[in-house]
Every structure is written in C-alpha cells, then in structure tokens.
Amino acid sequence: MSQRATNLLSHRKPAPRAPGRSLPTEVGHGRAARADIQLSAAWRILVVESDAGDAESLAKGLQRQGHQVECVTTGGAALQTYEDVDLVLLDLELPDLDGLDVCRGIRTVCDIPVIAVTARGSELDRVLGLQAGADDYLVKPYGFRELMARMDAVMRRSQPRPTVAKVISQGILRIDASLREVSLAGRSVEVTRKEFDLLYLLASHPDTVISRKRLMREVWGDSWSRRTIDTHVSSLRNKLGASDWIITVRGVGFRLGAG
Image (cartoon, rainbow, N blue to C red; front, side, top):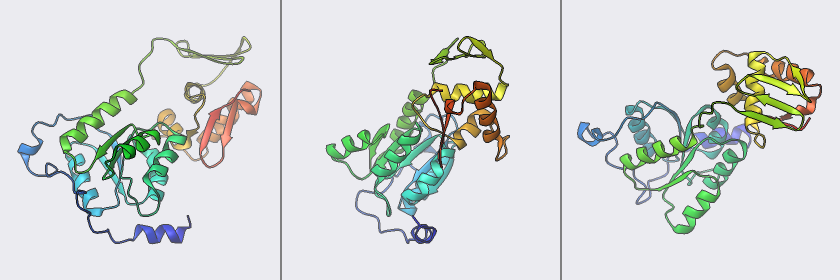
C-alpha cells in the first residue's frame, strides 16, 4: 500500500454505526459497573477498530483497568503496529483489508495473542476466525466483563511455562539453558550473555521468524541501538562458523537455521 493510500485511509470519516455494533454499556458507566471486574496485569493492547466511537469507548474501559492502549482504524496500520504490544483486539470489518487477512498476517510472523471482536456472529464466521489464527472470538454486542475474562484466559494460555532446565539441540548445535552453555559438535562455543539470550530465543522457536522488535524487547529491553541486533547476529555467525545458523528474513527478522 502506498504512503498516499495509507494517509487517505487514516483520514477516513468514521462510518455510521451498524445495528448491533455498539459496545457494552458497562464501559465507563460508573463505579458499580466496574466493581466486580477483577484487575488484570497491565498489558499493552492494540485495538483495531474501524469505528472511532467504539474504539474510544473500549480504550477508556481498558485504561481504567490499568492497561496501555493504542488504537488504529485500518488493517494496514495494524500490521505496522502489532509487534510492540502484548495483545490484539481485532475488528474484522476494516476499511482497507479483511480482518481475517490481518489475523493471518500477524500469525504468520509471531504468536502474539489475538482476539477477534466483531459483529460477524455466524458459526461459519467463528470457524473462519479461529482458523485464521485468532485465539478467541467475541461477537458484538458483548459485555465488558466477559471481554476482560476472555483476555485473562488468553493471556494465561500464552504465558510460557517455566522450566528448571532445558536443552535445545539443532543438528550439531546444543544449547543448555540451565548452564547457559553453547556447544557445536561437542566443542564449547564461548558466547556473551546477550548472544546466548539471542540464540536461545531463536532456538526456542525453531520454525518461527522472530521480528527485530521482539528481539529488542525480550533480549535488550529498552537499552538498544539500531545496529545492536546486527552486531550480535554477525558475532554469533562467526563463532558458530557459518552464516546459515541464523537466517535473515528481509523486512521481518531472523530465524534459526540448520547450519
């Protein structure tokens, strides 16, 4: 999509609300409506919603629960923004792309939890949404307490289970998480702490392309520069003796190779 087209889409006037698409009255309607909503951990949430009024109401309700919220109105904007969040609430009725295609695009690259929040309520619609990669499917109009409960359930399932010790093997490459040691064909490979974290993250998802933003967030947190990842990847390739151990996927990120 051209920049001009993206700008035009981002300045679209909100479409009139269709019957049945309004958000629940619980959102933002007083202390009594929120009293029985159990507070969740604070998450970064991307709301993909074509209706500006619905997006604003939902964002305010989520912010009252302590969450950080970013709202976008198009599928194109969603595909440029989702990597920085913990959870995506995705309307399937978008002005530029079908929400199912947006969901597939996210799922192809990463495993960030996605909940489809839509007026499409038939059994076929639900099946297609789940097959496209949505972790859950909620039909409008819905209750805010139900949304929060579904978000909690999805986030619980998405949290990695802690392990006392884990050894990952990829051909002749062996990564011991408990000892934080790397070996290649039985030969020890000396790596720095960040190099180990980077390699272990890639090896933990052998069939997944890990985006640069995710690597930056999970390995370096908020302390990184533009060349940080490239420098560490280059160093790891040299120490492992082949560039094929870490494959660059142009425009997306990196994945573990076979060496």
